[in-house]
Image (cartoon, rainbow, N blue to C red; front, side, top):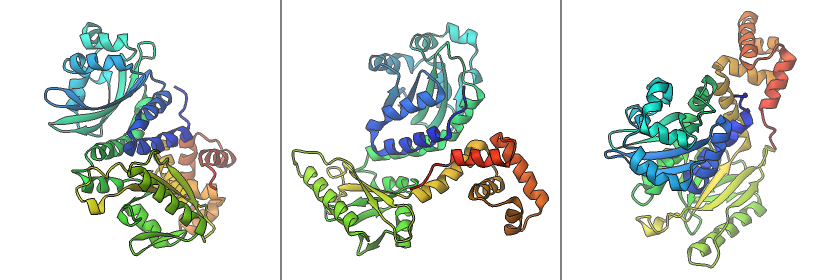
Length: 379
């Protein structure tokens, strides 16, 4: 498989977290996943035990008319399903860990999978207990063959993000009974998240949102409400919230998602506020506190720091190697970096040599170009 583009990985991770609260997005996200892995399809499912049955199912590349046969007849007998069900959350699995080609050829479930272009698979176990298990699976046809090492490593990289998103999806489904659990799950997101009541007051702010507000750069929290510094942005948010409230009161239109740029006095790139309905009104146990809107606050600068972390994970960089990569990208020479961090030149050259090896660069100019290509432009 050709090397996976880092930007494609980042786009997929962003899509995974969007789909957590917008289930209609899972088909598209699984389509991206299929393309990234070079597979024939992808499935996100939660299977209840016992007897096996689906609590959740999203797919791409799997025709709808296959689901009934798969869920009712194949899941109870499939060796891969029983093998996955016994594994702990966080494991990456594939066929040849537990079954041979000869055994596949004699198995009824593998005949079904082969017939529908899914003979082989690589998957990540997202949840696992005695009542159910959740899994994200990339399917591969007979022609495509077994997953290779690069695809296994890619699944290992994406697994924590799918786990967090599925956890939020499952909690979101039971919003009325599990509001507190939803709030805990929202704390895992990179973006700031506010749940807003009809009057604009804050029902909940995740840890990232609270941290952003404390900086008071573009917005702050006063009297339990969001105060945006820029007049135009403040008016746009209020207008969007008013429109959203009218749509929840039975208006003949549905309020679309609203993106609002919020300038910052520091001169850093604007924040982006995205306002959407929560769909929690009817199920929230306390009418007074019902959130009508969810507001995502995206900071491109914070996202870039997150990008560095993803680069470190993807290329297997140590903290020291990642710090050196950031400094080289910012234009620091190796001697200046050594002096700044009180390191010997021998130590710095060791990190530098390993960094070049892992990013497959033969010199500093190539390394700088590689890092520049990896990092998106901000602003």
